[in-house]
Amino acid sequence: MNPVQLGAGAADPLEVALRDLALPAPAEVKAGALVRVGLADEWAELPSPLGPIGVAWNGRGVSWIDRADEPGAFEARFATRVGRPLTRAVAVPERTARAVAARLAGDRRIRVPLDLRGRTPFEVAVWMKALEIPRGEVRPYGWIAAEIGRPKAVRAVGTALAHNPVPLVVPCHRVIRSDGSIGQYSLGGPAAKRTVLAAEGLDPEALEADARAGLRFLGSATTRIVCLPSCHNARRITSRHRRPFAAFSAALAAGFRACRECRPASGAMAAA
Amino acid sequence: MDPDVALAARLATDLDRAFPALVDAHAGRLYTIALRFLGVPSDAEEVAQDALVRAHRALADYDHDRIRVLRLRPWLATITINLARNRRRRQADRRPATSIEPLVATGLEPRQALGESPPAIAERREERRRLADALLALPPTARSAVVLRHVDGLSVAETAAALGRPEGTVKAQVHRGLAQLRRHLAPETHIDPNSAKELTA
Image (cartoon, rainbow over all chains, first blue to last red; front, side, top):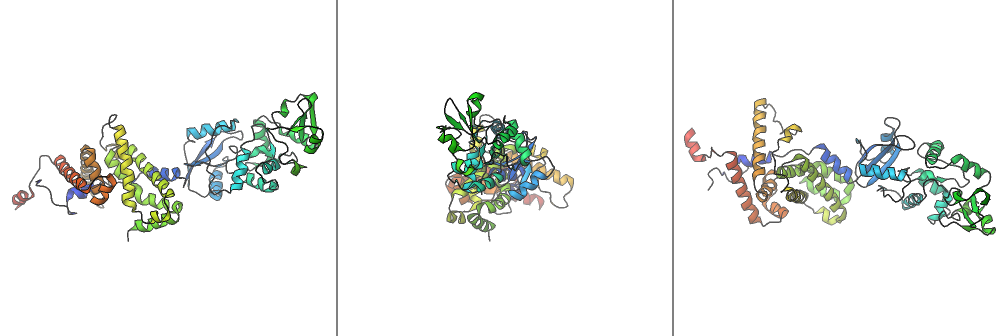
């Protein structure tokens, strides 16, 4: 038998010494675990058409995107609107940064995981529909409302887009007013919205001028198909075949059928 | 009352609200288990964090009654030692167990008793380092048993359940592990307490 063995009592110095091997967890273990389960967030800046923009994320996905030009502004807005603990990180994780950059470049196939906990199914439906709008194109609020099966909820669509927690990634800037004017934008007002749309290859001023002149739909005399003016199919129509319409019903009456990609009939009644 | 009972009740009622308290109460234990078993601080940090994330995922799936009666200490230890054992098996061929020397560099030094003189602190730190090294020199089966039973302080039954081994096996592994630690720590001064008494009498 081992002569040093003192029995199982707490007085055994070896057992006491073993208990004394306990250490506190490094702070990163705790903070990292809370971020990974989505109970805390980190943020860093990414380039965007509006200059550097703040992006917050946790283990569930991107949780908040906002302007970060003034010191403390990003943290303050996150605290009010999200309320979880937030810490500044050195950089956006590479995979997230790449996915966001691809989205901003117009690649809709890239999946950007989003943390949309606590949002209503209606809001999520609006944002997911906005994701379908191609880069360089715009759709009216009424179009979103009709497409998600709530044609009368045009105002609620506007509110949901104003509450979009991840602007640019969910392109609420591609949704405009039904009269063709640019409308509001949560990420810095109409001027910022114009900047983002221009960066995507759209001419917002020309679009608004056309709308004021009564051009809400554009048909092709050769295909007899009618589109929303910013639809990529409409932009291919040569000038001598362009047939402008102020109302969708007028295009139908003239024997045009709706483009299957921009689906101009959606919300067209609300726009009338 | 065991604070874990109240914590389990809070987790059952509102997981996300109560989870930070679980992290505060248990992250140190889980880090210690992983570090004393693996020996590498960065690996231990990852294992402890993974264990907490897995615990959250599991709790999100468990129903209210199951969480309420969950015994958090052994449950979390089980998750942690399993992750640590898997990691050790994956790494066994690639990297030998190392000493905890990097801890000094990262500033994770032993708790300092009040009024301890600098030489006493240095001596205590050296003792801890030798014990941690001796622990890492144990075979993995004995090491996992000793870490859970004596570093973390689980009961023999809890240690056996966490490791998926019979209680008798765990008892024998702990016994042999402690004996080996004693030999490691004091190879030349193996003094019979009775003869020591005689010497000082």
